[in-house]
Image (tube, rainbow, N blue to C red; front, side, top):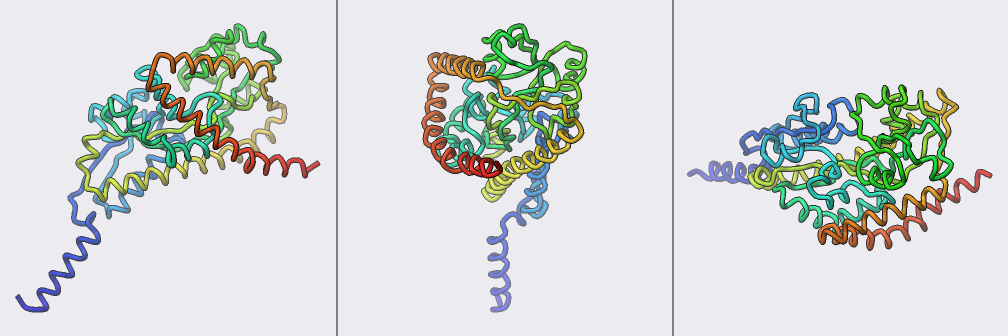
Length: 357
């Protein structure tokens, strides 16, 4: 072989080693979402992830994203990814509490960590390790998939002045928060999203919880219920990416790394997108509907909610070692994190507000 030919071969080998993705055969995956494709910002992370992965792989790793309008099984994501119908999914971990109650922690729990604290727990404490352990029995991997931050406590047709006002109240509120409210005498129901506005308007329900201004404005609840309560029940609602373990193991290492980078980037981006949407939506809401009254639940009501939450969490922990392990981890990290949150974020905002007076 001529020296020039040897040099050319060497250069080609270096090029393919530096860009292994370009040498790979095209891989095609499908991702199923719990949400409709148009429901941003919840649907934003998977759509952006697919674009990032395609660009990073030079068009060799393609992910087709399908919303619930396509697969018709919004609460079947875990089963579909586990069974291999889809290689990936985008949903929320607390939807699977009927399969394993400990999975609620990877979304959020009442009076738990805020988003910044929870992300620190995931990435720089025990969160990712505990989540991998919890999902191993399902043969899937789970990764953070975007956060809503503190969700609002709900829209109410009447003001809540005491615990008595909760008794007999008909409210749509899911998850552990629904169990807490049920302990306090609320008639809890879970109505499909498409029926919420009509149910509130006709008095079928007296109140409901959704997300925050950025998503609530699209639903129109502010046109019916004037009392908008601040949050307590979902302080850091984390969405999730689910990946079939066998499909992931078959990926070339560089594609696995692309997925990890894209998942982390799009999760953080959703947190920013949702914050911006809510800031803009709230500015419009309070201008167009000045009669909206932002309220915080009275202290006796909040104390009762906190006690009911602690009783609920401690009760589950007594029955499940796995639940207890995750609860203990979150409580220990939150104790450290909250001290710093108060010194930093809380006191900064408090100082700025005091300077207005």
